[in-house]
Length: 402
Ligand code: 3PG
Image (tube, rainbow, N blue to C red; front, side, top):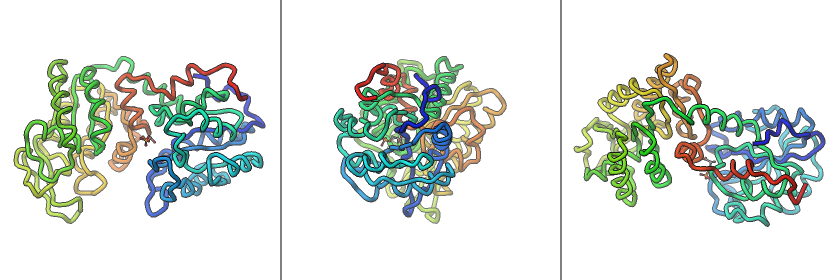
């Protein structure tokens, strides 16, 4: 990977693919972690004389302009994180964008409108990438968390312009490589969260690599259903039950032990005032939903971690954003941090929700490495090659546009 730090950027327009896909609440950025991590990249480039143009997606607007997903609300957060002026450009291609990039003041960051307002982005369209490339002279990918997507702004464009890797992408790759290439065993993966269908296929591969697989959150409910248990109104995906069965069989054959909850905290709704009860997983009432793991499951996970040397964590164990249901995630997070600090376990965590949960538990800076990437982190764990990284490795020496 060629580091943008080695390029002569003074006087050039540097078009950076960032991942500023951050949560918004009431029209404001609710978590600035990704923006804060990205800010030093922009700072360093402007200090070196570059004119910086930032492009990102936000949410999944499905190729149509949609004000809910506009990147405009990111402007104040990016300005605060960098201490610089930020100019919003209301489209990422076309006359508006071309006009903006030809009148670029060096100390102002230009932030383009959401890339996914155009179908060509997710189609990895070469012609859309060509239109994007007009916004800069040099391309930088600093979005490790989007490297698993072969999209126009992460893939096609890198074949059309002088393409470099940005510092946060390089830092993520270095940290994950160091920790994961030959992890100290026993190694456990903890996978939770609500995105069952997009993650479950990855477990199929993970069971062949891990000594232990700890499953929590909505993912666990799907596995409990696969064991024939009734999960009441809990979040689970009926369509994934068969895959869950296959994964359990594969784990048994690969000697990977799966730890599923044996007790859960149930309530009638995801509400801090709803009546709660801790029940065995074979006694979830039909009108209740499982929203956290129970005390016995917490002890079993924490005992298991004491015997592990590496933990790879993606996804919370329960609905941690609503306080009474955070207990399981927080207890395990604190245990993982204590073992990391004691030097007996390496803990690598990834994903927006996981980062938020570890921050809320007060341990985000007490584990070995916290990646901002969710899907890309899991695909990396699985050993898959990431198109956004591969295209930078095989960069074209003399692209058509320079
Ligand atoms: C993420 O949040 O993991 C990245 O921004 C990728 O988003 P996506 O899953 O919508 O492609």
